[in-house]
Length: 405
Image 1 (spheres, rainbow, N blue to C red):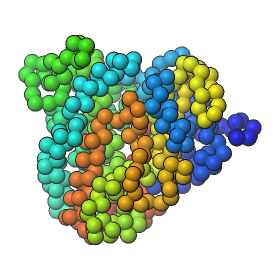
Image 2: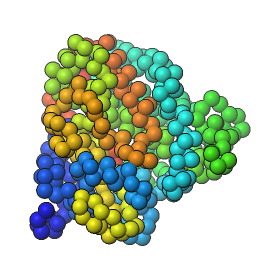
Image 3: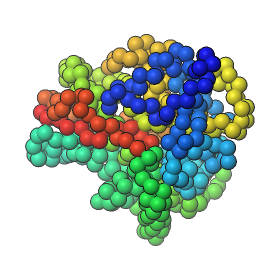
Image 4: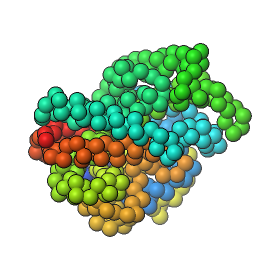
């Protein structure tokens, strides 16, 4: 790495030439600059990691924490709040032991066995949504017709909240995932509304329990015999609702877009549906528009990419860039629907990896199977260059996905 590389500060998130394409800087960063200085939307500086081994190391090492509340931690965005520095994140256990106890309690609801039980209902809902889209006529916005309502319906059912409130959830989620879209006042107001809603919902579940996650967590004890505090219950409900629909909704749209932009991919799956599982994994790896990445903070000196860095450093782990690292994946810039193994970092790594990944995989595989079966002639209704990215949020996605059949 040259002196100029060390001195250069890139604006982050990096710009994309098109909605589905990676930033042009990735190749150079992989080759020459494993630790790049970046300026975040807040104006603070952080260090960007794009190589697979470095991203995996930092995400797996408990010395790198999710807490950005330290005085010398970089803030991601302004206004204050958002996903990484708000009441919700502060209510979650951040010490390793407490986090693992919490995680064991919640993970029980996302096992492979539970996903098998949920699959028939998810498939029936996906078929209904596709049928309704077809009835309304073409062209259609597949994200609005299927990509958004399906994951919302699933996570609302799991949490025992009415999916009729999905427009509220969408707004609250967007404000929690805010980078530059909302003002400080808008963010604070929405988070207060969201907290009040979830507090009321948990009180109702305590009075009249159901067959849902939150009803079970209210009375459950962790391995230390402790019950989850109310603030943590509220934060858990909020976190699952945001993560359970926002990321998967975006991923459904991107998945279908990536498979249709080169229709040979879609035709390959039509010819061999046994590839659906590996195709979903490859779509997750290949996605160049995951969003911000994962921030991590360390209070002690650490070594990353053969460089000792001081305590008080904030890192941005760009999983989508790591997934395109040629040192980790042969033909990293090619989409290979048969790729196996495929140890991508889309769901993170280590103790904080996404606990909802079995659900996301189940939903993506089912949606893809239903679309291939019911709409084999599916195609993009606009040129790939006209697809537009979601802007101003932590997560990456497409604003809409116009399709025809």
